[in-house]
Length: 68
Image (cartoon, rainbow, N blue to C red; front, side):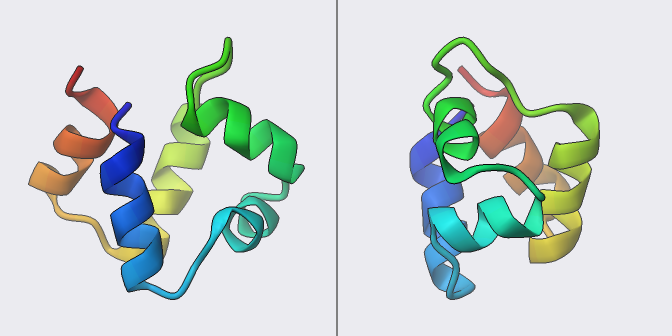
């Protein structure tokens, strides 16, 4: 999970932690834990929602969610 890259995409789209958490129907604290990989990870369905919200391309998906 590349939190920095996701934050860039969020900012480019006028979102912050609160607005994306609300979109994903989760508490802001839960979103923050997943963003910073504090014992939690985004589910496939949540990743798909983020991909759709920001219209991410394959390279962005790989960079944000699958590169270490």
